[in-house]
Amino acid sequence: MDTLIINRVVPAIRMLTSREKIMTARFDNRKEILSTDSEEDLYDLNFINGSASILVVDETTDPDEIIDDLKVKLSAWFDSRIGHPDYIFMKGIGLVAIAKNAALLDVLLGAQEELVAAVSGRVQDKIAIVTGGAQGFGGGIAELLYAQGANVVVADLNEEVGRKMVDKLNSKKQTNQAYFIKANVVSPESVEDMITATVKQFGGLDVIISNAGILRAGGLDEMTPEIFSVMTDVNYKGYFLCAKYASAVMKVQSQYRDDYFTDIIQINSKSGLKGSNRNFAYAGGKFGGIGLTQSFAMELMPYRIKVNSICPGNFFEGPLWSDPEKGLFVQYLKADKVPGAENIKDVKAFYEAQVPAGRGCRVIDVVRAIFYVMEQEYETGQAVPVTGGQNMLN
Ligand SMILES: NC(=O)c1ccc[n+]([C@@H]2O[C@H](COP(=O)([O-])OP(=O)(O)OC[C@H]3O[C@@H](n4cnc5c(N)ncnc54)[C@H](O)[C@@H]3O)[C@@H](O)[C@H]2O)c1
Image 1 (cartoon, rainbow, N blue to C red):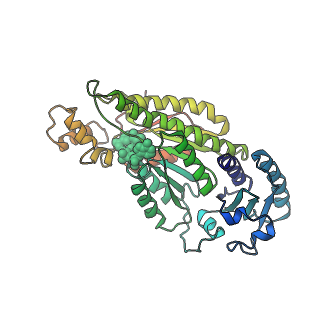
Image 2: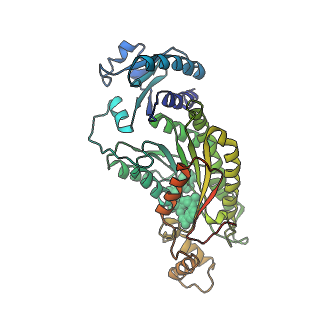
Image 3: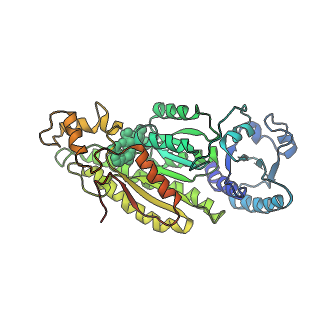
């Protein structure tokens, strides 16, 4: 019940209370809120101050009835007052706080007011999920989106590293915030929970970066059916699950705001554009991802949800390549993928020599492609190469 109401109603509230600027919202159903039943009692909650404005919707658990009631009441509200309500109260369900940024939501819900730095970035106050956002490309993407003003959800299996990333970002004390959610992209329940937790925390979803991915190299003789399945689950099925649950919330937003575009972005690979020797389990899943992107794009453009893949070249500095135990340099050396290579340096030099730009791909290269994809409104279903010229489209 909670998931349905949160994912249907909160994004609608976010859009219906927004005028020029798209708002940020937070859902709160603490016990003391649930045991409150009138506007007057709400003011007794220690965090609501007397000058705050509250809109109360009629008591029901039907999301459509809540939204219908809300539309009528908000229309009257905007006719007679300046600005949006600070809170929407749904008796027995919870309270939704509404503000222009995440730091102000904290204040509305009782956290101490802190000094925060106002930024004005390229993705200011947008709500972004980055799966696999604890480290590697995902970690770098989370950092740069945060620096450019987004509220960033780092969703990762690795709780320790993911929380560290979020703490690092929040220590910058900007008006936008980062938030960690433990998630496993191969599990439908976990992905749905990740989306719901994001909506609770920030009020909706503007972009999901489906980045979590794994790579185990190996030719036909080495690749076991089990490893093949695990890789396909993370790299291929994980993207489907992210698109499925993210698009449900994005569709609600598009229903209540007909000029608003959102994005589903898959971090694919140059191996999604060209076969990869003794690496077919990875390349096959990535090729498949582009098929999903093209098909989702057709299905979702009527809702102004753009769907694109970004296909980076090799990120040599990241842990996928450089981890001293499990990294690809070590794996490729052991698998004899590079003829004559005697050490890791030889393997790296071999790969760098294949790139016209003469270097590996960096996080900033990928983030520039993310901004391109998000900022334009007239393209979808594309696979955007970021390969230093290594892969050229036909
Ligand atoms: N590293 C490269 O050279 C390179 C090149 C092109 C594309 N890519 C793609 O970029 C993406 C990120 O790769 P990376 O190199 O940064 O990887 P990485 O191994 O450094 O990081 C991956 C992150 O994903 C998380 N993760 C793994 N499985 C997960 C799951 N089931 N659910 C949730 N989180 C999970 C890990 O905990 C980790 O934090 C992948 O999709 C990869 O295919 C990487």
